[in-house]
Image (cartoon, rainbow, N blue to C red; front, side):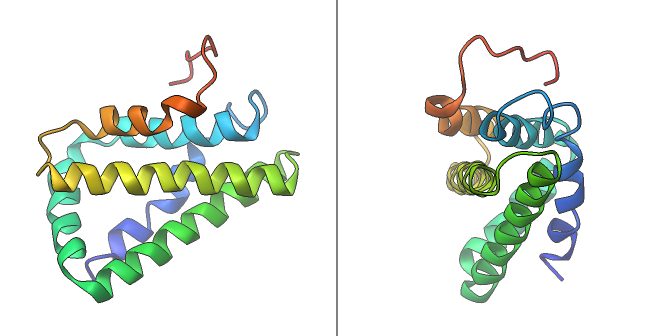
Amino acid sequence: MALAWTAATGPELVNQLTGLADAAPPLQAALRAVMRHVDQHPEQYALSLAVGRLIEQTPSLRARSHEKYLLWEDLLATTLIAHGAPSTHSRMASALALSGLRLAVREWIASDGQQPLAGLLAEAYHPFLIPNQPQQNL
């Protein structure tokens, strides 16, 4: 039950690829899609933090949460491939994007929400984002 609503957000995350998957390399598209997704849901931060704390404290929920990230990774990769990106590039881009999100979320939870999630995500993605890439889609 605790993970049901988070699993349902996978398609919302994939929808953030709109306008990016055809206009940017797979890695840039995946990173920016995740950033868009995080930026567009600040109203869910309090609930996300509460559920995140519960997940971090419950080994079985942590395992299920990992499965959720793998599902999202597959959804992103499949969408990038459908837009013509090479399979290997799409899968690597999706793995990196979701790993960065997972790490940022864990840091955010550890800070009890005191550090902004979007800032932690930007910090995680910083080495991989191409500078001067147009960000009007963000």
